[in-house]
Amino acid sequence: MNKLKIAVYAICKNEEHFVDRWLESMKEADEIYVTDTGSDDSTSQKLIKGGAIVNHVKLGFWRFDTARNISLSFVPLDVDVCVCTDLDEILEPGWRNYIEEVWEKNITTRLRYKYTWSFNPDGTPGVTFLYEKIHCRQNFRWIHPVHEILQYYGEKPDSYAFNENIQLNHFPDPSKSRGQYLELLELSVKESPDDDRSTHYLGREYMYYGMWDKCINTLKKHLEMPKAVWKDERCASMRYIARAFEAKGDIIEADNWMYKAIGEAPYLREPYIEAAKLAYSQNNWEKTYFMIIEALKIKERNGTYISESYCWDYTPYDLGAIAAYNLGLKKEAVKLAEKAVSLNPTDKRLINNLKIISDN
Image (cartoon, rainbow, N blue to C red; front, side, top):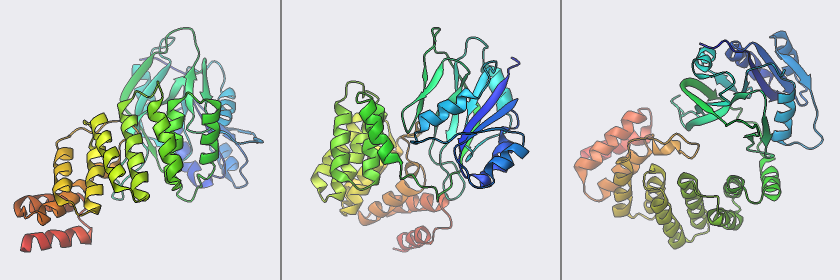
């Protein structure tokens, strides 16, 4: 096992309620560096008291890549491994040993691990995917004003390690605004017009804001980009376009784009479930049932940020049960309704649906 010098680094602003939990999670590091970008609460004092090295920086114009690059600059050059986290994230215990198990000094440049971005109401993992914010100290910089990523610029190969035992969990503050994201994403696309990922993110953000025409046009542009070849993300763009057309009242176009999404990535549950939800909204029970059965044939959840948690909870069974009931398929309806209840046993609507289906 390698003996490595490991440092955690982070940016923060007004996150005093996260400090104690975060520091406890990061205590396996040799050093902890935090760049405070303008807190007016007790965040910095609590971090310093807990042993973190805190630097204060105020940016004239906020962008995440600049803040993270400044934060990284405070980490000494003799550090072997840098672990970038936010204060609303927690590394599960043992993470240091897991890094040292797979990290090859002077060879490994960064490490992939498991990241749970959201949790379901019952506490089970929701959106979970692979993350790669653990990296060697030199030859890395952050790029993009928002949804920033690490860019490697070293001469030797960019060599990844992976340890599935490293688990980072995200517990965000729901009151925290993401209002700056749209402006920063527009800037990101302006700065890097050929970057397909930024264009996808911008189209998705327009969807969040209900800016349906901009969403459709931006995501169509994403699909036309030469570098936009990752099928999972292309499928997501098509699903979002379908959502936008549905919101505009154009069900035919929404349906067309859902079929395109299925054709793009038939190995994912997401397009089938969304097609089922669209059919359900039109009381098209045959199509709803068909799409759910096709979705449930897919047993393996993909480990990317594209994964939608509702595709893996009670939702498909609930939709399938209602569709089967309306089609007169009582045996299948009961089976699906029972599964839905087993996955969400406190939901009164699901329990009542099961009773209605069973009694008729």
